[in-house]
Amino acid sequence: MNALAKLTTPSTSLGKCEGLINGSIPFKAGMVEWLDATYPPPQNDAYVMRATQRAPGPDYSTKQLIISFAKGKPNNTYGLFPDAYTVRVLFVDHSATKRQVVYTQYMGQAIVAYDPASNNFSGQISVTLENLDEDTRRTLDLKIDFDAYQPAPARRIPRRPSALAVHC
Image (cartoon, one colour):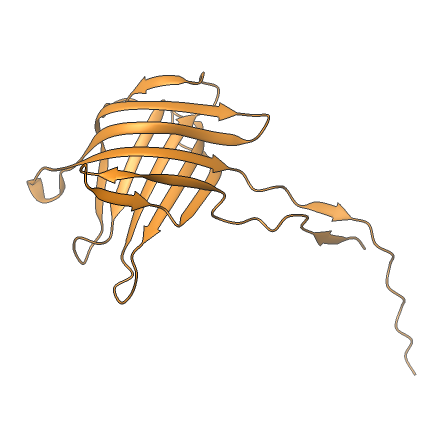
C-alpha cells in the first residue's frame, strides 16, 4: 500500500494580510488561509482569503477578515457596495464585547487579482463596513493589503509493501 506523504507541510500562514482599522489601529494577521468556497448565486464559486489576528494573553481576543472573489471574473478594481457580489468583505470582531460583532461591506473599492500559475490571491481593499445589530449603526474603516498562497498539494510516494507478519 502506498503511504501518503506531504512534500511540504502546509502552513496556515502562507501569505500576509496587514493594514489599518479606522486609520490608526494596526491589523496584522498571524494566520492567513487561502481556500475555495461555494456560495449561493450569484457569487457561486469563489476564492477566499481568511485572515485572523489574535491579541496576546490574557484575553486572546480575535479579529477576522474574510475576502471572497468570484471565480471566472477578471483581475480588476471592483466597487464594494451592499449588493455587490463579485468581491465580498466580512469582518468579525471578537474583541469589543462578549459576543462577536460582524461587519459587512457598505462602500469602498477592492483591487483583486488571482494568478493561476502561482496559486496566488492578492489585492488591496479600502472599505467602510457597517454593523446594524440592535438597530444601532456602527461603522468601521479598513485599509488592507493581502497576499495569500495556496498550500502545496500532497503527493503519493510509492513505497514497498511491508512484509506479512508470521504468526508463531
